[in-house]
Image (cartoon, rainbow, N blue to C red; front, side):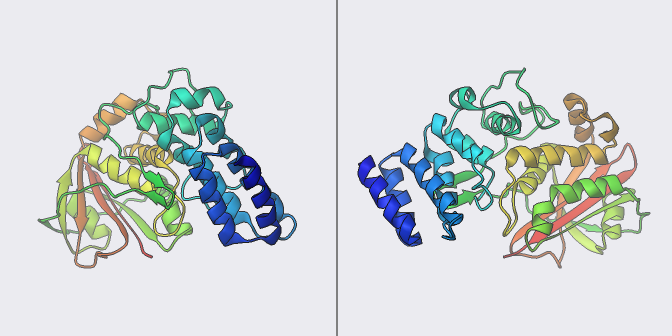
Length: 328
């Protein structure tokens, strides 16, 4: 089987037959000839240097390698340049079907290894406390955090559903409040939503004001809104989902990165950025004392990717409203 696949590959690469090469990748995966899948990827990538535009095949083979191959070969997807057009980061894709104990012996020290460890921790694996973290947050999910729902990946791509939120049915009439110039919190939100705004069709806004929910909604340009109060862990779940997502057109950044950027945004609004990395228990306590709600108004888009959240820090007398939308 391997010899026939190799002979077929050489001919298909020579002809630059994309459709046939896609079928060849399918056949290779069905036969579980994972070493040959590496050969397909490398041959397609090398062909690009000779003017044959086979980079989609290199990307497809590398994606299937990360998703389905045994751990020893799956980690080789991290060594390849064929990542750009994959539906998500290789670190997240590898983590879907492979346990940390199987991956760990084959992962070289560095950034990719750390992200894979974070992704597997979010899926319930225990990671050694001495494992290096490329992100400034704990790998272990804290007791006050949500039980994050990781993205699923299939041959057809990624799927990550927006967390369920209650229906907004409590009417709030906005009242004038004093806007607050808080460039650090605004920047932290822009970083969180960057794939939606710079690599897709989306928009994102963040407003801070003195007072509570009515005041910050007014500063955000809202006259009247409907809200539904949610728990802090639900707000974090929503923010992490948004930060992990690529919106309508951008590739995913992965749940580990989304969670990390959500922590940073919330810690910055809470005034804890000077002590970053912050104490996880302290952040949990601070968020537990805040009020969170999702909101909508008559101008809220009903289609596409949407996130609208408001949070109130009564101890500091400040509130923050965010809104983001992306569409196909």
